[in-house]
Length: 241
Image (cartoon, rainbow, N blue to C red; front, side, top):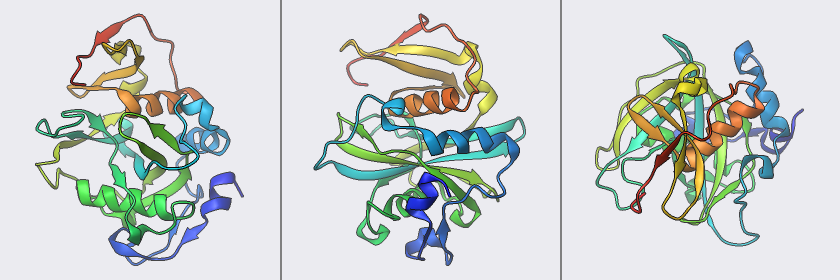
């Protein structure tokens, strides 16, 4: 049994995300193309994902769902774009996700898995019963917001319709072919006025950057999907970003 599945196993039903079933973490039955991601998830250490690691105490516990599906152009990833009227990260693409609620359970146990599925359901309308959770990555930290984020990996085994449930928070929900994410023509480096730089993707009429792009970048790398790209090709950000 792997690291994530040893820790999380199967969670008892609770809340809407459970949808009357156990929430298990298992890689059994995954399509062959997802096997490299599952293997990488079992061995990745926090420092391999980000230089920003959670503090020993404090931080706002949260989780995101990194959901892989199979669409018309092959493997794809589900993303959403935040509403342009929000105070923070307006218009920024992200994974579905959010803060843990008491109903989600122990942050050290099954809580992050339940929270990722619940938030994805609330934000995109997806049916969590069609999602197979196959891995949980190490918790990471977003200093600007104080979030301690657990990335939860899912396989969209039975796809369901998705949309922006609350237009006040979400502008749109969309999928991105993995082929576009790995295409060097779609890869750039963002530069913030503060001097911070990071990987980014120009896909589906959106600039995917920040935490979301950083996690995607590392998954592509450790799954062996990365294609060499021009890291000197930069896109500037403004202070509102």
